[in-house]
Image (cartoon, rainbow, N blue to C red; front, side, top):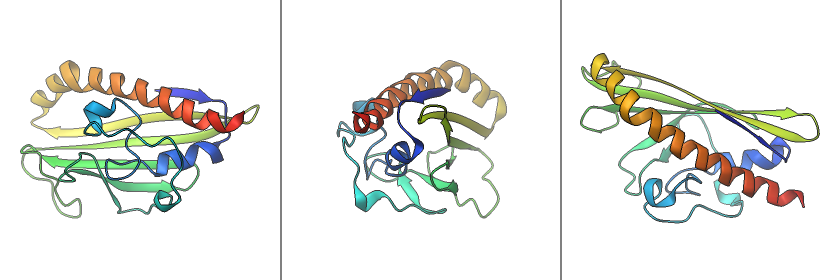
Length: 165
């Protein structure tokens, strides 16, 4: 999925790096993905530092998170979410559990003509058992991701473009 934003990457990137339930939120449907807390409407300097290995809470309780898996500041952010089938994160430095889901959510930010940005979001997931994961992806995760990602794009676009008046 992708969106063109009428703002340079330098104005979009700060919104991306401050994501997280314990930070600026996810800019999507806040009741669904942020415990009803509104996503930030401004850049927070205290949330602008991010490093590979950092954890960004994916739920209000902080019991699950995305790990920053890769980072090219100003251009690329990859978030990894490894869970066993009980919903508990597992250590990615060791072997995967017997039953798991391990996914990657990646954000690529490119500058395009006219001082605009193209934000491209992609993902990858691996899981065992495979058949159960395939059914879940088709019936639940892909439609849910489309629904949430579309909203995130719209809200990121509004926020980043507001500085282009």
